Length: 393
Ligand SMILES: *Cc1c(COP(=O)(O)O)cnc(C)c1O
Image 1 (cartoon, rainbow, N blue to C red):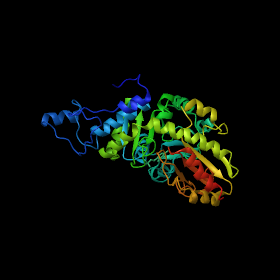
Image 2 (cartoon, rainbow, N blue to C red):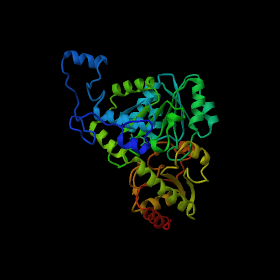
Image 3 (cartoon, rainbow, N blue to C red):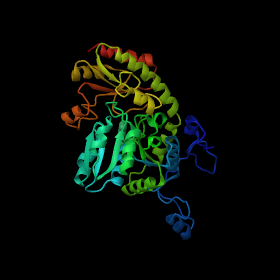
Image 4 (cartoon, rainbow, N blue to C red):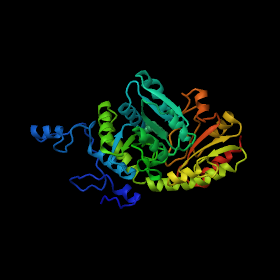
C-alpha cells in the first residue's frame, strides 16, 4: 500500500506495517530483548548483514522499525531512528557529529536541556558552542567558524516562537559542508518537513505531537540519506538510547491521528490567538498565524499551517502570569505540548529556569511569558477558561 502518491493522512494510517503470521490489523508488540537464530550460520549471517534478521532489541526490533518507517515516510526521509526520549535523540546527534575542539552553532532559544547539556556535559569534553538569534540569517553566517561541525536549529523556537529560515541556513551550511539538524517537534511532520528544505536530520520529541496523548516519552531522528542514517543509528545503538517496543506501539497508535489532531488544535489555536491579541490585559501574543508575528511571511512559506503553540505576555509580568496559571481550570498547568489536552506553563520558572536571567533575556524569554499548547477541546471552553483567569489579573 505504501506509495509516494498517497496523501499524508493515508500514509499516517498505512505506513509502518509488519509481516505477521495472523494478519493483525495493528502492529504487534514484539516485547522481547533478543531473537532466536535458526542456526549458527543464520546467526553469523544476521551479524554480517547478509540476511536481514533481528538480533537484539537495542539494535532493532520489528515494532520499533514499523514506527521508524512510518515517521520517515511522513517526514520524507531515508530512514528513521527511534530513541527513548527526545533528549536521547538530541544527545545522539551531538555525539555523532561533534568531537573535542569542534564547534556547534545553535539558536539561543532552543529547548532548555538541549542547550543545557551542550553547555555543561559536552563542554567538559571540549566541544565549543555559540548560541545566536538564528531568526536573523546574518547571525548564523557570522557565528560559523573553521571548526563548526554542526548547525542545530529549532523552528518555531521554544518558547519565543521565533522562526528561522531553514532553506537559507541550509544554503549557507552546504557551502561549508556543515550538517544541519532541525528540531521539528513544534510543527510535527504534518506542518513542516525540514529535509525537503535542505536539512540533513529532522529531530522529534515524539512525546509531543506524534504520540499526542501525554502517555509516552519518546524521540525520533529522520535522515535525508543513508550516510547520516548509518552514523546516527550506530551512535544511538552504542549509546543505548533505544526505545522500548511497548513505547513504540503507543507512539504508532498516536501517530495515526496526527493529522486530525493537528488540524483541530490549529483551528482552536487560531481563535485563541485572536482572542488573546484583543485582550486588554495581554501585552503581546506570538503566534505564527497572526500578521503581528515578526516572521509571519516566512511562516507561511515554510510551514503548512501556523500550528498550535502560542506564547503571550500578560501585563504585570511574573505575578500576573502566576495569577493566570493558578486560575485556569480546563487547561492543565503542566510542561510538555502537542497533546489532545491544552497545557499552560511558565518558562522562566519552569522549562527555562536552568538558564540564567541574562541568558533568558537575551533569548527573549521574559518573566511574564506564558506558553500555551492548545488542545482539541471545544474552543469556546478554552477561551472561557482563559477569560475568567485573565479577568482576575
Ligand atoms: C520536549 C522537547 C524535547 C525533548 O524531548 P523529551 O521527549 O522530553 O526528551 C526536545 N525538543 C523540543 C522542542 C521539545 O519540546
